[in-house]
Length: 505
Image (cartoon, rainbow, N blue to C red; front, side, top):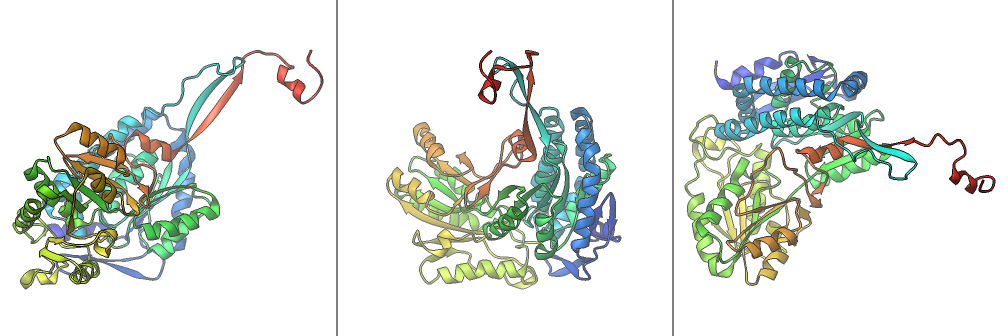
């Protein structure tokens, strides 16, 4: 049995995980999970309906009091076992991620899976550190203290580009803080979310703390966001859908966390290490076939380095190997679907009318034509206000533009609605320091682009949303702060009472 078929046999009972059990959905509609490298269906399952969402929320609500009441040490112990269970499942998780998403196996094995295991290990420790302001007598007559308490049932929606990591980013801080959760993965990529939930159960996470509903956004997703028993919604996806999520969430005045689209600038100053910038641009633009909200999409290069940068990126892109995701030598896999491939191609074809396609700009022929492949593409000569510069493409496409002064380069970098991530490349500490201050993004890298770590937060500004994933900062999303105040005087008639009745004694 090969890697492709081994994984899907684990879902014979269905693609919903509710109250600790796999089950079939009840919507009456089916969904095909397709291998984007071949176009072949690898799993057909029953989609979740609103009744399945109700059952999952009810299971989470039942599990909440006991899980919220567990000690930080007890939750930490469970998460440590969870990290170990994920490590045991590493091979299956990597195979499922590559099968479902078309990721090169080396990316799944060396990035997605180890990053998820590390995230679980981080939150196992962080569960013991829900800190607040120190108890003190701020008024003089009372002792004040801060409690951090879980918000309740969290309803989260994850995207299709990083199904495993996004499941972890949603689930781990929520449950570490004492919440229970219902996660809706993208209906086209449910496999690793379900494996993730099974590993949690094997680690001893109580039934109902983590539930998975695999359903369509307009049905299961909207019902989850609007559910009156869901206290918080966390959504990662496009800005357009994020606006819809926000509209629904306001109907029940629930807490909202949004990580939305991006159009990350890659600013290269004239004193940058050119070789490092070229390599960083190709890696940053092509990671996950460009299907990454933080991918380098707009390279702004100061004019003295511009021609050499364009030439260097084009030459390096030409060496990138497209192929079978399960071949260890494959560098670039397919896009998630033929629909997404055609969407990316549409952006490039329209750009030919006003810009130059330096390299790429086509789908490969031959055996790879069966899959949703698209060659690495570099575009030059586009105007700042053009579609290819302003819109999120979500594919292996990098646009490069020149700039003259530092002021111009930073202004151009900030000139889109998005603000998720950015990078700046220079050997000058003052230049890079200015870039970190002035680039309007939730994450700014210096002389690199893309690395993430569990200890540091991830989240955006402007149309890229608000709130943080990962790190201890994510507890700001998943806990509510309660002020507790004790009188320490024992006096029955307080001096301030005279403002309501009587005179000063």
